[in-house]
Length: 254
Length: 86
Image 1: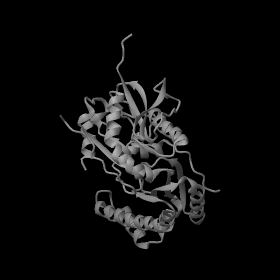
Image 2: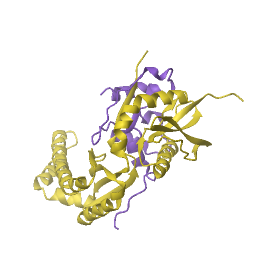
Image 3: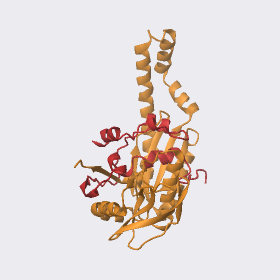
Image 4: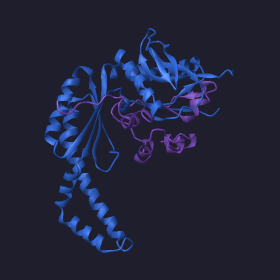
């Protein structure tokens, strides 16, 4: 059989001085041991895999996140790394870790014992329609558009779209004031990402002390009580601090 | 309680929303052809509470299939570079 070249796939960084075991991972059908590569008080959680590009299919993405979840169960200072990074050797990962050490040192105390919680708020169709119907001018514009052919009503459509967007911005700002800002007060940090669909009114992440997780859950529930007729809540976590760590690495051409 | 948290690794859409472009992100060139990582320059910005999302919704929608097609993702190195050159 042909000997395949292997590389080191990395999952996340952790604060750890001693080697830590995180068991095995089923990596594209092969069981592989997870190990740590160390530099001073920092370590990378990694596994050895065939050297190739790993496709971000469902199985691989879930595998990456599941390993990080498992690490989070045992270690309270986890720096997530994006999917799909393979290095030539453990030595390369060590050099990477050395290079990142100043950033890691700065980050560790900020994320120690903290978790990320995600909250997406999606407007219910009936409520959105009700809000639209409160604006007679939108109704009138809709009738204008409907009375014309698609081509003739082109600019009317644009105007109508603009008006609808205005209304959604208004709804987003209501949700932001009543849900996001209240939760933000109780979080270490909060991030208000752009909604990823038209009916999404809030796409937020909160960095919360693990000890305050239950308290935060309750606050989310209180907000849900106030809004449950109008919107759906999609509450997820605990995640590592994906939305609060932004380190971009580039390779310089030699 | 009325709203229960969904475990972090149970929703593909939520996972995609995070693991492709957040946390530590490494340029596509570095993924397979790291020859002498000494030349790796660390252009790191450590941000607590602010991060930009480059992944657009259209791309995410394309990802919500079981097997992600190659063209559905910004994994061509030049495409990714364009996004990273911010």
